[in-house]
Image (tube, rainbow, N blue to C red):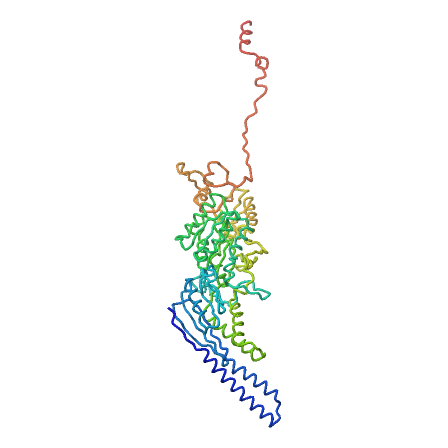
Length: 572
């Protein structure tokens, strides 16, 4: 329970006012007498006395800031002084995940006449759904922003997929900043939920009709809005909560087999923080190798990630996790660390110095307390770097001369509207992106000609010309091999329908494909697929031409039936 806090402000005020006014009057009399005796300009002394008087009497408007923060129930007080001006901070700690605790704390501070302004910090986002929870009858309540559920420190080495040097922690938020100086409060963003709308807009632009969605418990609110939008747009979806998935590889294998069997594209949406995204992408990146390269998840899957807590370090770490996946696009939601006690002291110091500077330089009639509270409210609203973001970047993972790297292809604004200036998945236009295939062949001139040059074999011929053209058009590289037995492909077991030679290599999945003049036969179809035939070989049979004179004597009798011939013979 909260302990009581007593502060006799009226007596302290009276003491400050009495001392200040006495000193002000005494110095004014001395100035007058001195001016009369020596003829010094009286206006100069008046300006000095007014300045001193304002400094000395400013203490009557000292400010007490009440803070509601997350923690075990207790009250702490501390003083913050700059240039003889003190701001007292009263910190009320309570469990801010409970709505009742926040309501009780607000009412307690609201009825405390000593408190001038209330600051709410580090509260759960569920509080935003309760109306009038942060309203006050007597004083201002300044919310610093709800606690982000998905914040985590990604700047640790075990968060990378491969050994790599850590990047320095950046101070700038990764987003497109506002150019007109406008700010938006974090609570307003949470209530608007721009991320689901942006993801839905990107999916619509990609013309996806079915998607697989991975999420975590911390992003359930956004997923609820996202599936509503998908349902309205006629997009079919399947949901997987990564917190409840024991074996991500098995889930991906089931998705791959189902999609390939139904001839559907593998479109996957991830709405997660960094750790969740890293685990899923890492499993997808290793998927083909774990399946002994009998699958092509890296080529045929497309990944759209709404990544919370995005930083340039997170970008660098994810490149190592997804270096073998062709199509990865990210809606980069900036890192949000939430509000800390250190933040509020920084704001108090800045506000105090600004207020003192203005009170000294300009003759203002407003009390110091009112000036401080107004500036304090402005600074609280602008303290969070996220508030300066106008749009979130949309990045895609491309192939470059230096390897894989993210590049920006568009942005989504704080209302969820999307603007794209390039393809989200540009690698779709570049075939197999220089991947190496293992290809088997056998010599059969003029289709495949094998020559030895300097202890190495060179393959030439019509099939090799076709292979080189395919490699250029589909953007892949290759390595050539031959079957150990040197056969084309005959049945070795009719019971199991197994083959040797080139067909056997394909059947055992030892190679990716064959480039050779191999005959297209129905019996080989269960073990391999054939391309369109590019050469037809015809078979001719030669027979001896009959002698036309050998049966010339039968010319007159062949047309007659045997009965006629028999009658003629009988007559003769």
